[in-house]
Image (cartoon, rainbow, N blue to C red; front, side, top):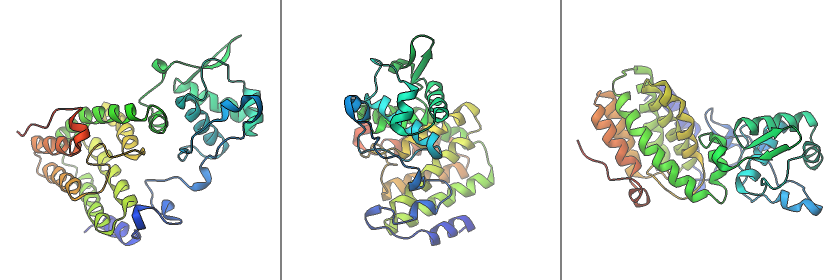
Length: 295
């Protein structure tokens, strides 16, 4: 067992019902956001109350401080439809309602504009753009859609996209014998196996996310590597199980182990086949994509 796997296994504590205990989210270097960065419901009252309707689904902001929180809050409201194109987003009004400075509002709107969610034009102001203009591959937008009315569409589209990306990445990764990455893939399988026996869903999911990220990096294709954030977001968003990665099971663990073994053996076809089986474990996915073919 490697030092990394041993450290993570001894640090992880069993969690009842797979939920993290106090402080658990801060014990790992590759997941989670401190609770202090989470955003609560906005206090938008009065005649503009419809602007403040945000479901009880807010996830941790990837940003830090007020800027990151405001991006998270406005992004969720836009994606959920609580903020529409029927009225402009007035920076002064946003600043007053969220009690933040004009600088914070301005920078937040710039981030949302870069994601394709809003546009700012002279004499028109800042308005929400149509969905066709959104950067739907942005990890933040993936997360926001997963918590909104488009939840089912988002989960289905992610499953279809992963089924296209990851089998190819697995086949390509078999041709790159980087021992350090191969070792880390094996570590992640060990950690997943240990957390499965302990009922530790948090540790399992984080090791799972790193496994898939490492595999895409190992493929040696920079364009595929650029899409690693999509796979990571797909594994982290909430929702019912869609693929074999969405809940800890012996079947999921065995498929991950098969992938790691095939990569270590340099067998691209076996790695691709195991990945396809992993992504089609759940019947819901089999209605979306064809069953994997054995080579």
